[in-house]
Image (cartoon, rainbow, N blue to C red; front, side, top):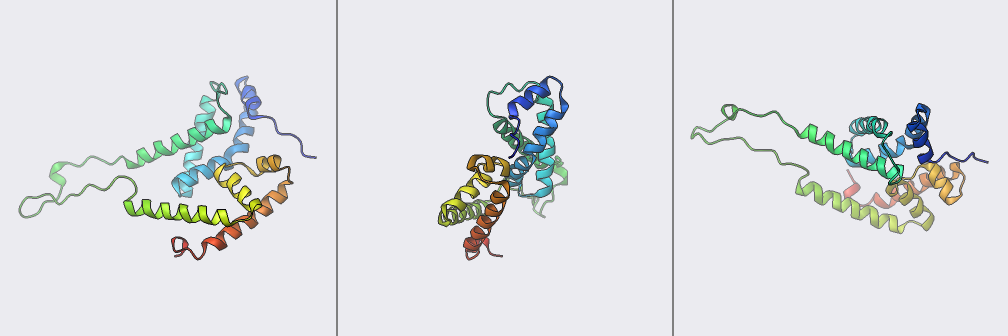
Length: 196
């Protein structure tokens, strides 16, 4: 029989009393979920890793003041999201240009164009189409596969949490989730948004 996990709030209380290993346990427990969220936001493995590292530094620094007004996972989700947004702002900061450095035509008109901020209308439409295709494909999965996909990818539960909630052995959760992903991939393969 599996040993029960120490609740997150109890680990935070231990950390606040000076037990550094309690924070290590929390980070170990939630790092995969934090990475999944960071990757979903950034779609870049390096950026996601940086975001997660920043997020856990903030968790460590702010852990002593966390009072449990929300679940630890909710708090972590907000921190990861904020770290991602902060990193995007930093990346978006461009050096100022001197007006004299902007190229001009023979008539003296400026040839400089400001780059568009954020995703283009095409990117937004493509993302919306992909999301629609995924939702449609998930709805075609059997109930067991749907549940696992939603719990892991949307609710961002860990394998262990799914195992606990479904009262299912951990190995079974992993193998069934893998089969669910394969089934979803087969359903998405013919969709134009997922080709190429």
